[in-house]
Length: 162
Image (cartoon, one colour):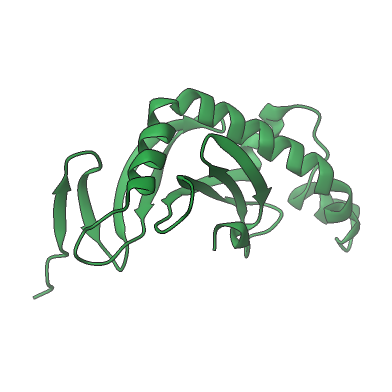
């Protein structure tokens, strides 16, 4: 018989499940569709979270529409910057058109991105939240958007969230 995972009920975060990191799922409309994302809260099994995690979570979800707007536009600008290099690295135009097509507007980016997770980091000097997605152009490293405090500070691969 499998052991039931440890769960806690947190006043702000709601029901969390321990999987080596505290998790729960949320649904949000992002990249043109309703997506189920995994919320990750760093910490230990005792379920103690730091003040900046609480602030980052509150800030992220209280201004969710604004965060989604900023994530989508930052991802689009990032894609515009890296697109030519991505295309040039492909063996053929056909492969480039599949992996990193030329796009002119934000909505064309939507099918290229699969939202996965929102990370609320522990032990940071500022409230820190990171958005992570899979993307057609980099399945290994994905797409990440980092918020520190209210500022969107970086867009890149998952490495910016480590």
